[in-house]
Image (cartoon, rainbow, N blue to C red; front, side, top):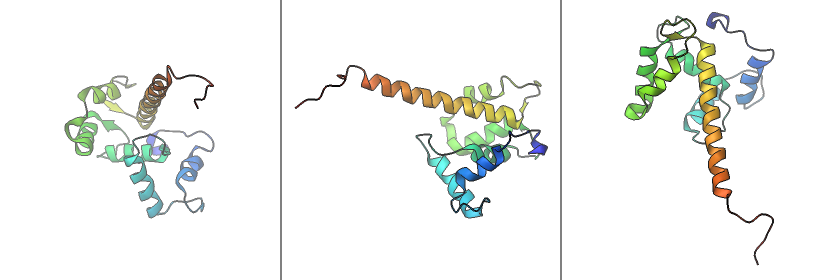
Length: 143
């Protein structure tokens, strides 16, 4: 994590592992990592733990190993993963607030973006749920 210029909060690394440690060994096997990765990739509902996935995703985006992700690296991975269904606006929003205006993002910036996206998706689901419940009778049962 030090090479990513990221200082995790106390217990954060342990939490990343605990979330996906199927056999509670306090370490991850390749099989556990693969299961976690597939679950998150297939998780349309957004309920799978994704902290470790976010780290792995960042490292996959960092093609040249400089602990930064450049816009062209991200575009290439997004195109491979989603085809033409991803939007250039998504990439632009990921890179618009880069701290150093270098056209690259750090792990912290990437993680914060992913968390904002996840929170927005969760809020959208909650809003849809509330909208679908609107107009339903409260506390009444029908016989």
